[in-house]
Image (tube, rainbow, N blue to C red):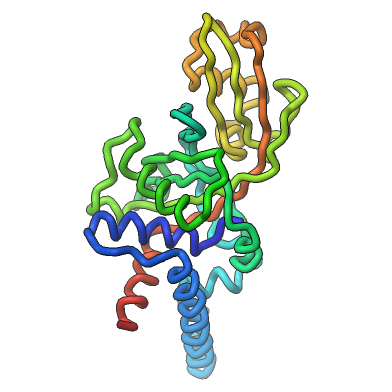
Length: 281
């Protein structure tokens, strides 16, 4: 589902907006990334041959694009956002943190062109490499990826009411995660979902008001919560202020479970790719 190209496209969209230039399209990013990977793979092979012929201990430093091809682990993995704040906004737009990684190829993901999606921006500490949520907004409406990603890349970066808009000088400290959501199912009850597998979206009535919020699949495992703790936390994020032991007494509590894997990318890899793109002009 989510791919490196989707993340590059989000960085490209935000960077171009802040730099007041026209961004590349998603299809252009996908084509250029494929070419970039082939080029860097060839260069890396040459480096390894040179290293072997010189008999120098240890291996050469590898370009991140090549490392993604050769690693046996899922590509693009990174530390997920540690924040768990979420809220419902008008229509189907929601805010929540991002989650895990996915290694499904671009070819397979292109078979479906519309998805519900989230775009998450994190600030990465240069000293500890810890991630702090910087902006995240998504939608449960299936959108064409080309327009959905560009729209929510900017909305989550510039219009998340919990944060000030991201500035151009902040770009080098950021990484981005894209999550595409699938397999929506109505849960039988509040506990009919699996930790680490499902994200959940809840809605309920209390004090003559409807509340709603969602968490993506990795939020509960990140925080070390049980299912009940996750439900209570999510109700709190939705604005409910009742006693936590009374959570089960709210009216019409509905839970929709869903799945979704994310791909993440840091600014440094975007910068390397963007410089390569510029060098071709």
